[in-house]
Length: 337
Image (cartoon, rainbow, N blue to C red; front, side, top):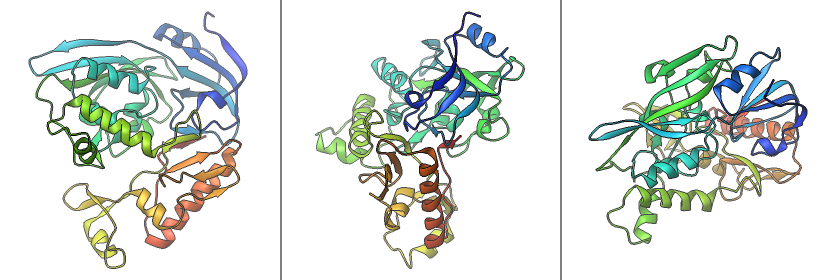
């Protein structure tokens, strides 16, 4: 076998929480041919990309396959749109920067999100009013059990808020080898009304922004609020923003008139989980090396030597607290192993 398989691999450097854990077997694949080799091994399997959306509460007793399949290319172009294909192992922010350099619009609000391209459709990543599925065209995936390649359309992926079929019916069954996205070539429609984007642009004196301006504003905002995983272990936003009915939200305003919300359809709205967690008193909380980031309540952090078990119990305590106080269940955005 040409692919190197490592036994008893320390995983601390391969996920952004930096928690100590070990995989019985570990292999990194750079092509579909290498992936085909590795899939012949008779082990339980877990796919790993940038490791930015999971943490380990224990050692993994099987084979971890790290997706490092690269490449970015234009595969189709019309007068208004371009189809860009990227390998599943491409770093997401590198793809965003590549598209902006080529003046392809659509990913600017998704700047600086950690992780790889292959994880984007699985999580249906999103930020600042834009979700990945709005630019998605199709993807290729390999079924882990059979090695059979399959193309998934937008309908096939059954996207939802931070959700897709790969987190439900097909969870753990496919590895995403490439993703195609549909971007604009000119007259890019911009999303400026979510978060502080417009304020940052005004502070910079930018009245008519382009996609690069929006990207730079998002990078500034994220950098000011979110910790660098290379310094403080974290997985970015730990919980999803809960979606409730409009009537439920209006009822909550009697007790919490300052509770913010964003539209999520005609009869539903999205409540910022960070607001709920901060209002419940968790922002800046720390027990040992497990804590809630002082600058952003949605981010759980490992200050150096926290264990997966400690992080798990902290997350559970926060969820129970929000349910007790507000009657709202919080769902984890991060996968726990």
